[in-house]
Image (cartoon, rainbow, N blue to C red; front, side):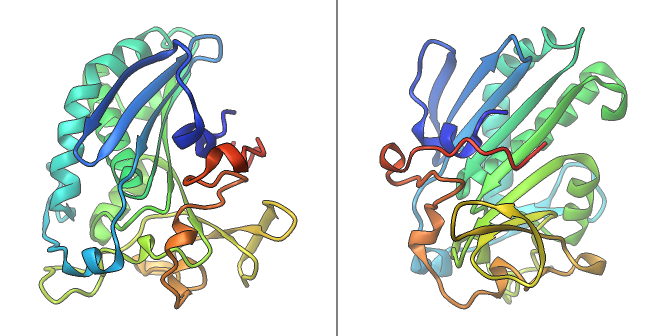
Length: 270
């Protein structure tokens, strides 16, 4: 399977790129691979300092018609804008995969990770509506892979997301980005929480070891605890706010200097 971290910042267009547009703080692009019947849409993030996060006003708004589900208002608005611009193009490609099946992956880093997950969810919903049947009866699968992604919404939204979409949420060491928006901000109507499942790249953890990332770092699986509470054994349990960790390395790729880091091309996901 394609190395998503490498594609995010290190890929250079070679004719298979269909579009590239600056969309609401993220660069969105997508690649189609007809032989393997895969489509990969990727969303590059933008920098935000700790102070910018602290000064950012966070509001929660209802997510579509899901009772009790609330999402960050900025993520909700911008992901809808992005999805509307990409939907017809992506679903047109996906239509060619329907006979033998295929997979649509959306991947993103930082803020781009937030958009990747939400746009993937919206695309899946749109595809189900177009086919008038649930995803379990559709042979085109959707999944999202995010790197250093911030929180998206409240517990009810997370429950809906976990049931609906396969998401691999990758965090790195003591990266500060996943700590925001602050889940306990006083103006929030409900706390914001992360969705399952976290894959934490670190050199020390008491959770489940899933294999070596390189000679020093390990990849750990960090599931949420019961009742939607967040897991503080992994990234959220770190005290540092490390901006360098936000940029990697992720499986051998450092987003600020990917050409030097290169890609290990290791397969961690099915």
